[in-house]
Image (cartoon, rainbow, N blue to C red; front, side, top):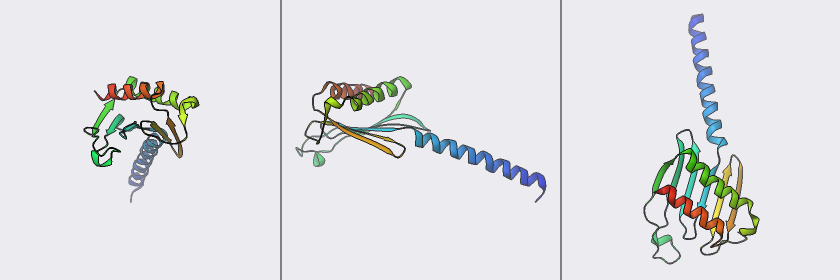
Length: 144
């Protein structure tokens, strides 16, 4: 192989390596927020190389506590920066307010999980608390 050919291969390899590392860091560095509402529906708020998204995974009747409740249809929606920041700041606020946390998951309580790299934070918030109401109102508004 000629010297110029080897240099081109090295340059291309280096560029690919840098792009891979930056992409991997971005995906790994952004937290994933998961909220389980009082009915068992799950909301996933994430930010990756494709953008910021809100994913709604409804509970089906066969998985609901009553055997009848249906959370509706699955939705995945792109979020703008304002929506993403509003949702995550409300969730962060609920995590910080230990006064609304409860030890065990009970019917109608909300469950928050935040996955940041290898760190995972989970808390359960009281049913009917101001924080729970605000989180669920904001998530439903973003899904419209």
